[in-house]
Image (cartoon, rainbow, N blue to C red):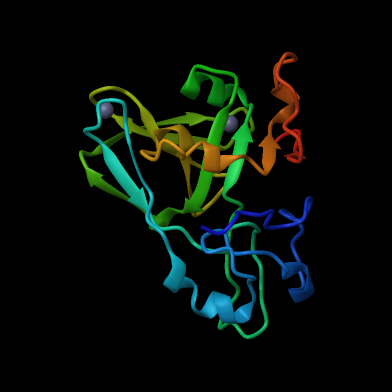
Length: 201
Ligand SMILES: [Zn+2]
Ligand SMILES: [Zn+2]
């Protein structure tokens, strides 16, 4: 088992124009050094984690992408620009308090076409987030667990609630690289060491 390492230097998540030289990072799945060759073969090391709601009637799986750390990254040698998202973020916004019943959510951002409901069906509810954008939660109609969200601020992404992963180590592997809405972090909750701090999104 290869060690998971820091995959992108701090502060690079939202910088729009990453150059190839910024991309000396490791694959989130297989930990190989990434570059154009790895991207071309990226389906070779995809994994398919699964998750479910509290009553286990609603189940999902998603396909991971090796490079899911930065937004709108273009690499030389690829046919088109790859739109990637950073995968692991905690959020302290007021909506996430309601969704989780706790201080913050732990989220995995994946392209929306990579998540698939494999059993049961989702209900959904749309609300206006405090930033004025639409937020939709997808949940089990039986037990009410939210399994993922979609937010206009993250177009094309599904935001999976990492606590619904079936792997008992799922949250262990989901340490956030960024804290969102850090301005709402409760005073008794320490800053997550090494995580980029964003006041909002
Ligand atoms: Zn359920
Ligand atoms: Zn939030």
